[in-house]
Length: 324
Image (cartoon, rainbow, N blue to C red; front, side):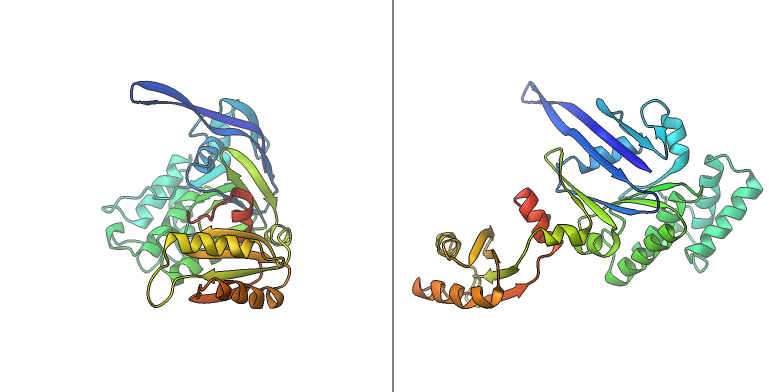
């Protein structure tokens, strides 16, 4: 459903009376299969949003090719728009309107007659369970209700591909869980979902495959399970903060050096006052870690062990956690 090859986008940025060239996207390649939930992950400034805006025809690529539902993105952007739905991160509704009115208007924008638009709006109200508030002003909606309306507006014309930009940002846990259900329901109805998110647990739970972009290039792609399998062994998290407070930077540096030199530790990453260690076996590593720190007079606040997660994959591929 989506095929991208060598997509590039460059910006000219003027700062301090000097113009510099910024390569936001430096030639990305990926494909999204029909009926798939595809996660597109990356830190701020990595090129994620620029790629999304190119695929949704909001930005024209400077190079490369892409097709959406078999339609060439650069040659026929208007045809592409008829095949896609786009739900922006901040939505596009107005407090003074209501869900039913907006849904009818959106359907009319895609060419439906007045009667057909009213039928489509009624079907969307039922499908997204908006009945109890569909005729109230949008300004009275909760965050979760407003987000469900955003998605309903994005799919009112039954697109083949839906682009969801951070669909659960700012939602409370129940609303977030409800949105996950909606995303799966869209996929079950035959739509292909292209999803960006800052929540790695969300990508792990929802996505059939994910792609990680960093510095304008794709650095990893695969199923969540396959990507996590690339990081074998266990993860040991050592938090150096205690009840007395955070440790001095010199203490963190010393602890990281000591632990990185341990035979059981394959690699060590520092995130503020926390050390993330990758080891073949947590059972072997934890006693050695405690002993090595004790010799240096360093008392950790907590030690945790777990299996590798997508956050570990992200850290390994980009050198930093997504939260950074």
